Length: 131
Image (cartoon, rainbow, N blue to C red):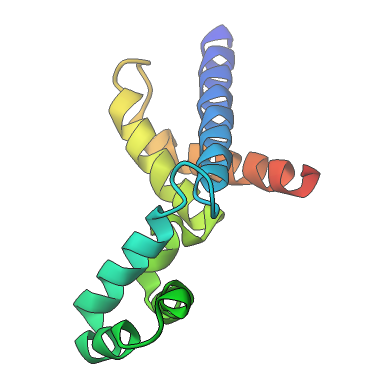
């Protein structure tokens, strides 16, 4: 019984820390923040890789509107969401990476990752609604 309680506390702790990390990273990806150029960089690279003609067309536009156009075009690419555009989408992958790197150290079963994803998404939605 005590073992299950310890496992539950570990899973809830990991989920809460992952949700806080996702919230923090979302804050740093905003325009003017320390990683504010991340979304523009990823959008440019994805559009260039997926649709070369659209990339060249946007590059001919005025410099001021290029970032906006790249982001709008990248919104149609599914990979853009988990790379930072959507905080909840990014959270899932951050949990998988973090949990994969520490589950062995904490003596947890790998399949608990699904519980941690659910808990982390739940905590993240609470944090988002509170701001």
